[in-house]
Length: 73
Image (cartoon, rainbow, N blue to C red):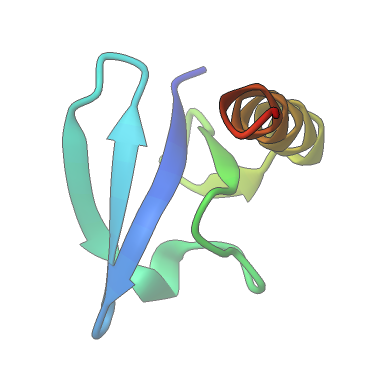
């Protein structure tokens, strides 16, 4: 299943980034309720998106660790 990260919202659209760093623009209304920038989405076979809480948490932990190392004294 393809996965995407929500990059940002602009008006009624969501900008999603895939693993190859390509951007996709979709109507915000097709995303799961409560989806936010930084969340990881899986695209189902029927084209619907679902939140992947496990991948989102892992991604946010990696980013936090990189920031910690970057700003380390």
